Structures are given as C-alpha cells and as structure tokens.
Length: 227
Image (tube, rainbow, N blue to C red):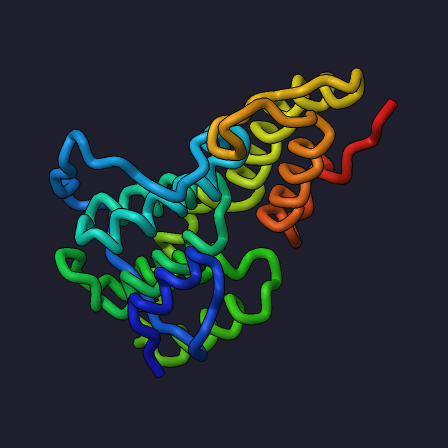
C-alpha cells in the first residue's frame, strides 16, 4: 500500500485522508531557486520564533504546492529539527515512496524518518512505520537503524522535543507577562492590530498542546495560569 505525496501535503495541512504509507531520501539536495520576490501566503510569520515546527511545515507545504520540491524538502527538515512529527512523517513518505519529482527514493532514510515520527505512540504513525518496515528488505532495515542512531541526536524527541519546548517557553514568557497585567500584544500574522494578550496566549498554548501532544519531557506546556 502506498500513499501519494498529495497525502503528505494534506498531512502538513493538517487533515489526514487515505490509509497507510511508505517514505523519503537523504539530506536536501541542491535547493531549487525560489524567486526572490515570491511571497509565502497563509503561513503565520509570528509562529516562526514561537512554534517553528509548525511554521516551517507550513512553508514546506507552500513550496511543494508551487513546484519548489527541493526547497520544500529543506523546509520539512527544518520543521523536523523543531520536533514536528508530521514533518518527519512526510519526510518518511517522500523518501520511501520516491514519488516526488527531483527527490530520489531512499528507503532506509524513509524508514528512519518513519521511526522518528512514531516516537510519541501516535497510532497512524506507528502503523505506517510497521507497514513500511514489513515491505522493506532486511538490508534496508539494517541501514535504516544505523541512520536512525545518528538522526536521533538531532531529530529525536529527547533533543528536538526539548529544544522546541524550551523555545516555546522562552518566547511565550513576555506574552504571558503582558496577559497577567491585562496588556495587549501584537503578533504578526494573527491580526493586523494588537490584540488582548490573554486571547493570543490562550491560542498559542492551544497550538503548542497540539504540536507537543504525546511528548514527555522535563518542561511542561499547559494552559495559562493568570497570577
């Protein structure tokens, strides 16, 4: 069973349709040229510092939809660096299936990305990894396990998850201070005008809860506690 890249793009959208996967190829090849004046629409620039995994996944979707596949793959890896499991899953699909123009198939690398995506015990990600593994040769499985050991030090939740949560907690702190004093904040992309800080902070915590769902770490992301 094989999912198309259309499914991977929807995953980054983030509505999943279709059943189970297969995968992606090594580090981003030479990035395709993107027109300097090309503007990325519908990606909330305000999220780049606060929830970079979500932001770069959005940029990746934009580039794929506009035919800049290698640039999209590079943005997916940036999202994966910030612990986006959907980005890691999409990388797995792309490399394992090898159906993205300009990006060669690499089953071992696809399996390694699938394994990383399945870290948080998400049923769909784990099932996809199991099916992809079952369709792979023993040689590919062994090669993927060697890759996985190297990739975990950059993309695994013990490193990337903690990195992303620390970034979120650092960036949300001044916004929470404003919320606790009844202030307003301006976050580019959320609104053309400053908004009530409590509203913005609540929205960001809700997005963080989704982004970090299933992540067990030393830093807790929870609802805003107004002092």
